[in-house]
Image 1: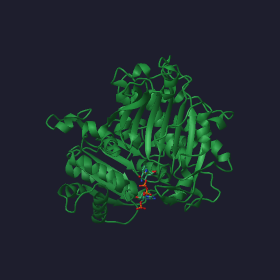
Image 2 (image 1 turned 90 degrees about the vertical axis):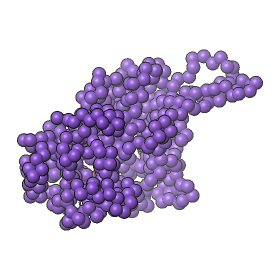
Image 3 (image 1 turned 45 degrees about the vertical axis):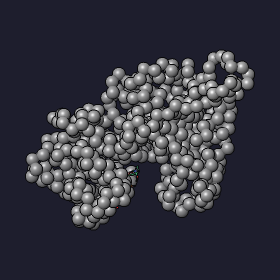
Amino acid sequence: MNTIINDNPLRQGMRLKRLPQPCTLIILGATGDLTKRKLIPALFSLFKQELLPQQFRIIAFARRPKTTADFVADMRQGLQEFAGIAVNDRQAEQFLALLHYHQGDFTEIEPHRQLAGVLQRYEAENGVPANRLFYLATPPSQYEAIVQNLGAAGLANSNNGWTRIIIEKPFGHDLASAMQLSGVVGGVFREEQIYRIDHYLGKETVQNILVFRFANGIFEPVWNRRYIDHVQITVAETLGVEGRGRFYEETGIIRDIMQNHILQLFSLFAMEPPAAFDATAVRDEKVKVLKAVKPLSPEDIDRKIVYGQYAAGSLLGKDLSGYLQEEGVAPDSITATYIAMKLYIDNWRWAGVPFYLRAGKRLPKRVTEIAIQFREAPLQIFGVAARDEIAANVLTLKIQPDEGISLKFDSKVPGPGGNIRPVTMDFRYGTSFGETPPDAYERLLLDAMIGDSTLFTRADENERAWEIITPALEHGQKLSVLPQYSAGSWGPAEAEELLKRDRRAWRRL
Ligand SMILES: NC(=O)c1ccc[n+]([C@@H]2O[C@H](COP(=O)([O-])OP(=O)(O)OC[C@H]3O[C@@H](n4cnc5c(N)ncnc54)[C@H](OP(=O)(O)O)[C@@H]3O)[C@@H](O)[C@H]2O)c1
């Protein structure tokens, strides 16, 4: 039974007014970067807000020999670095007391059997149900071994409670490997136990796409081909590969950003209204819109996709080396660090509306946004001179870093003249709510503990996303060189051409 809490205003504000049942979180790969930088700070924040269950424990599972005391010391240092806690923070010490370190190799069955023993003893001694949440914070190469060993150790189900598994992105390296992994995971866990994480869905601004569209009456009527000229989705990073060249060579921008984050934003933006706000209804609609994406045919791929790779350049006065000079990168690498794509959705709402999607590293600014450009007014009554001053209306959903929504519209410049100039109306999260949004992992960890998978990716959704980008991946592998762009610029000239051919231009951000 879930507990209904009425006394705590913070809990009252929770969407479902629910707290997780007593449970144990088992983090596999707990000595890694993700755990220290994201998971432990997010769990500590939930702890401080009293959103974790009363009986809760974290088992940290990794390969390095360590004692629990060693691991706690590492996490204390991590909280100082990433959550800004002071030395001897009382709450942090209470939280750190929930940790237990379990050493072992994921490729061996024995550490998983021992883990089963640890869990059973803890649950029996404390009289708590066997509710277990496994979090795979490991390199993807370990997923299959872990899942099979969890299954073989009898950890995929428990008689007295629930078992769920969170799997980090990337889920698969391409369509075939995603299906193969789905087969392995699906052979051990049922789909409703599997939580494929894309942390973008935990961002407040991403969830707000649905609230903005479906809680307000005025936007939905214009959310279609009749009023919208085109849509631009941008995920721009200033960072390069940050010493992880070898990892990036295997990944590239298409797998790292386009297959997951951008297609998630795209599907939430373009989906039909779901019948209810629940995991099945929302994800059914997301899959439906992804299925309606017009496949990129070999004939038009050159006109719809632009690849790029950053060359040496400079950003904020700092000289930066090119991708090919990064450590771990092959001198003749054809891994893309930039991609721009034009997609169409073949359904009644979106037929003929181009969606321009772009993502890149070493761009001039870190920004993620969806910009909706509306059609121009049908008749210009302000004369020929004013026509040049009038800009199309643009609604921008700013995902990060300046979270908010802004609407650009034309306004009369004060004074006796008839001049017109675009102005913006801005909503900012920080100003309106007086607080910075919580980290995405807080929300997602809590949802997984509660059993709400709405903000997690379903197998069919993930596979359809791979299908959409497969032609881009395959075509990219046939190229011998990629268009270059200077680090600190907005991408290759070919990307400008992509829109210029349609008499449009990328937004200057
Ligand atoms: N880092 C991020 O910010 C971030 C963001 C989004 C997604 N992700 C995803 O999250 C996952 C983890 O990323 P990460 O950066 O934390 O990786 P990482 O720093 O390389 O950590 C890997 C962890 O896995 C453990 N491990 C690897 N092989 C093992 C084995 N055979 N047996 C036992 N333990 C083993 C390592 O333990 P030992 O070191 O003790 O051997 C370590 O704890 C990846 O799928 C990544 O794509 C990460």
